[in-house]
Image (cartoon, rainbow, N blue to C red; front, side):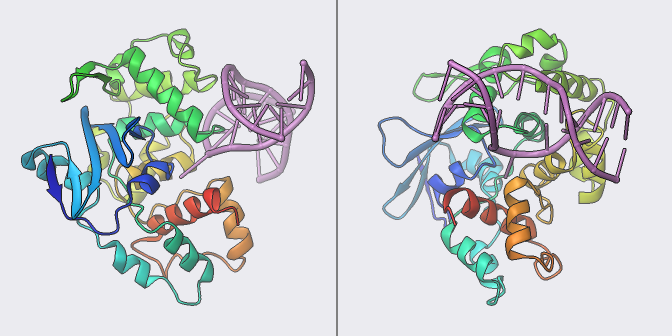
Length: 272
DNA sequence: GGACAGGGTTACG
DNA sequence: CGTAACCCTGTC
């Protein structure tokens, strides 16, 4: 375990915020969380002074520091919220500590195709089922088995029926088609990281089952385009109710997407 | 128990 | 361009 000082980082809130589906509490160990990403297994715990991570310093610097968005000052974002924007003030206070994770592009794409007309607990089950069925087996530092997220090439070779076995419903066809498009180079998937927000969003929307909302999620949660602003049913309600004059995108340029996540979290959990 | 909705998208008219 | 249909599961 290594110790890292991190401010504005709440494990529970981040894990429940609906942006990631493979970060969960470790059963029987209060306050400890496990996550699988980039093929690796990581456990995290809040210690006396700083967070404890089950990885080496090298791995932290090469992967996790970026994954947990350590280069960004979240306090600065909270402070930048308009004092008169009461709704957002409450949202950032309530969600204090939520970080936008930088997740793998393919995993995020498939996960958010699954997310449509679906709820978080079932999305998690679907994703886990997909990993157990078609992901590579690995062992964590405790000797327990876990599964990587399947590759596009692996999914591309399946049949729609294979995927239906993961309870994906009508999304099975979308996933199969998109995995094949990616595996066969029908869209410039590898090049997404080098594109602008608008370019990446347009490219992603060529995929089957990826509309504007899912594309925005991939831009925000995987490509870290922090101006991406996914509008789902919850955010739609919030916009109508609290921003009838329109959301101040210009005012919040450079972090609007991050505020979106706080608004989403506030809306689904605070019951206002 | 049956109806209903859950972080949308596609494919029709 | 509006809208029904899509699959499945948990919840009321």
